[in-house]
Amino acid sequence: MAELKGRHVLAITVGAFSIIIGVNLVLAVQAVRTFPGLEVANGYIASQTFDAERKAQEALGWTVTPEYRGGKLTLSVTDAEGLPAAVRRMDVLVGRATETKDDMLPDFARVAGVWEADVALARGKWMLKVEAEAPDGTKFRQRLELFVMDQVQG
Image (cartoon, rainbow, N blue to C red; front, top):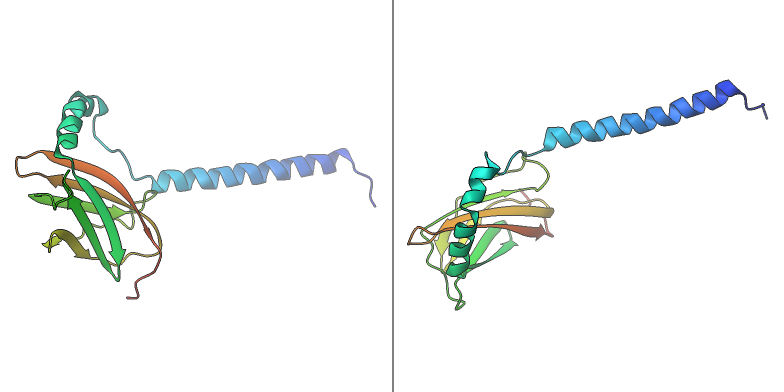
């Protein structure tokens, strides 16, 4: 076995730090490249009406329950009594929490008291950003998680 000299220690140290710095650079570039962006354009302005909007939304008493089966995404929106809620309009952004390349806005239709849309989702964790409106104009916003266990063939 050869003697460990100063240049060997230097090469080992430089090599180790090069790997660490290289991995950190790759992770930083990926984080910036896949960052979906801001939630609101101006946080201060959004904060001015946040409490009033939250109280109005809580007064609706709505509960949204997502379900995904066989290529069909259903959202059950119920009121405080557990009955189907009167929803005037509903928009749902379906995507991954970590990147925007899989984001989609499916067309939901109300069928037998639930909202449903045909959409092909791969396995894994999905995020649903629900924006709905009550007949009186009250806005309802909620972010939900959906775990897809089976993959749709297509």
